Image 1: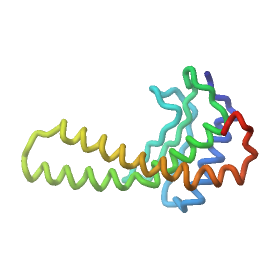
Image 2 (image 1 turned 90 degrees about the vertical axis):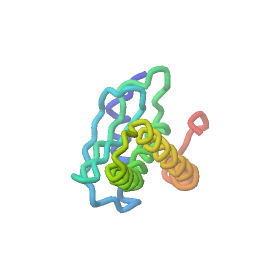
Image 3 (image 1 turned 120 degrees about the vertical axis):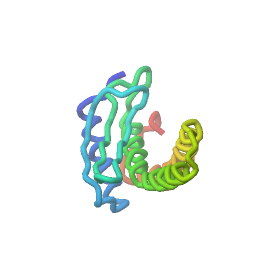
Length: 147
């Protein structure tokens, strides 16, 4: 199923809300409504340039893109930006360690990256339940089928 221009507008609006909520003003943001490989939305923060691309996928396959989901994914992607420094610091430290040890450890790096991503997403899922959902229910009338 396809996302609409209206849903993309809601995605942007919800991202802007959470950017302001968290005070993430030290980034430049670009929004895109584009094709994606298997994700409903994504964030691409670049900690060096301080530029973030926040994107909503055009096609969600068999999943119906409700406003509830679009807004939840907006929160999720802004949270990715919020926690992006965790991954950057860990990967920098690891790269320095590997340089010092002169080991070829690509699989170790990939596993570490996956572990960091998993830990970050665990924090975001907790935030979705404890921060986003109560706030969402206050700000929006939520039809039963979207709860």
